Figure (tube, helix red, strand yellow):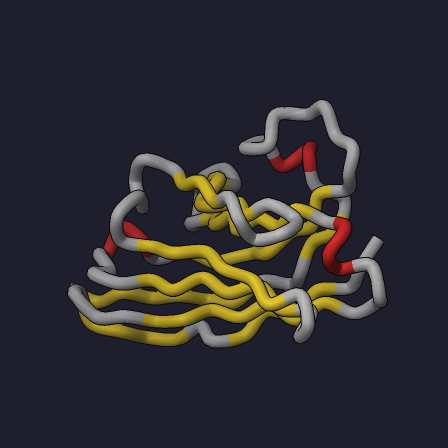
Length: 126
């Protein structure tokens, strides 16, 4: 497992942007695919985006596709989530997570990930 710490959340107006960062400890960061999830009050944790171990492949939920971009810097042990054109419905606590390899679980399911950060609050006002 790795230890993960998110940062970059905050309050932003609709249409604005935020960039979340997730710093990982340990020397094996590049061996993990990384994901971002979010959870709004009263709702289940929801898949947002995932990036491959090398950073060459990323995919997104339909709700954020075209607005959010996931990236990683393996030299800095950090994964990012650039969020543009934010909407009030994007308001949630955002979590980064690490998925070990190999892994046969659905990559969009929380069960595919064995390490989680503490979360960072994103609030989008209308």
